[in-house]
Length: 577
Image (tube, rainbow, N blue to C red; front, top):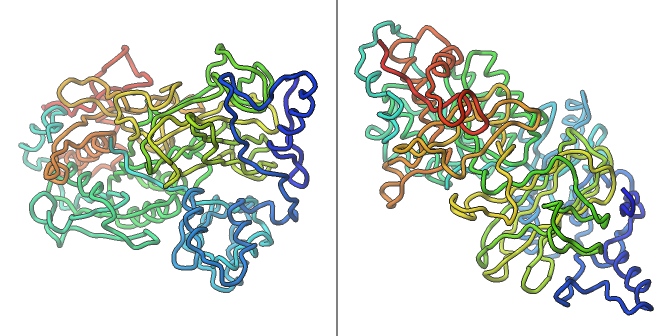
């Protein structure tokens, strides 16, 4: 594209600030102002001065980790720990949890090298990614581990939150059946979630008795009861059939999720529920260890239901990087008006409202997996004062994932409007581009961004070919919940697979005066249906086989036939006669 700004190699790429300064000098004689948006106020550059050159090995490290290599002895670490949170890193005492991406077939070599670095603890290791706790003063050593292509932050999972559903899906008739074709084989259900606060208080009432609840904590911070979300999910499953062995696994990262799926498979569960997810995913079912473990579970006959996501109103998508004025800033609405220049204006901004101190995450992705040399950056600024508050602009040089990620933890200075802008620094713009923001920002009722696109908003790992993605329909209307993510996947597969009731009652949330909403609440209806059918009639069959029965019985909603909003239809078990 004519006028496309380039970004030189890591050794010598100019900052936006320098390009801006040069443009001011060029225009000074003409009387034009390059520093003034249309209303005359100046948007301050987020990148002061030149980016320093770095050794080739250091280029594999995230910029935050490179900062840690320059910490002087005795420095107060607390400000750095807060900065790390905003960039997706968590500290545990003086250790940082990192995600290490090995080159193909080099995982064992990398793990062996990591064990030679004093203080490094490998928490989980898979061919596609390794997670490790690394002493902050040893982070620099990771740059020179053979076989590593990138060291970055972990992929963090979150609950999908924004029962009447049993009668809607036809479960009551099944509950009244004797175990006509049952055997002595127990029904085992796995629930993987962020936390299970208060589950012990419900044992023997809303949940099975304690001797039939089995737990495993994979979280690095050991906080098994970080949230009541998983407890509410388990309640809905048990509403279908209380006479099961229940396995609860707590996780927070993609590596921990992979470990949990492997553990549940070894326990012999027939069905797994995951009312959690992340927008940081490839969209084609690849490139992270939890997908490999979910594939193994599928091949073992285990059916896994995961929330499709609550992202229909908090997601933007375009098939290519549109930059009609050639200034390097993406146009979120290509037909809109913008003025060529070094700073984003007009439709080059995608804005949102946020309250002071609000914790938010934003993720920019482009469909160039597993590694990319297309170099994009994500910028967030205060619309009132035209001041940058956060930047994610890691170099993509051919060995990194196509992701930029920001956590606005404590960075929102006041109630008001903030805007996201996407910059292309290098590479062709001929691949799809996406932007996610936390779905609970807008309460699941109104668009979170100025420009939203619900299509392609299925989150991970629900985008996996071997996972059943569950969308949400309001239990008493069968209307698709406005936030429920739409398909298809980025590689064109039908998603969600089906929908199930949401906005339902649970003891966990009812005691707080809330209904349980979101695709988080819909997903355990499908899990519970499989568990009930296994318990009553199909105990000799695998979970995947029982799902095929359910899929054939789903109630078609929306456009006739399978579609990108309802999938094959709303879960319906039909009277079993």
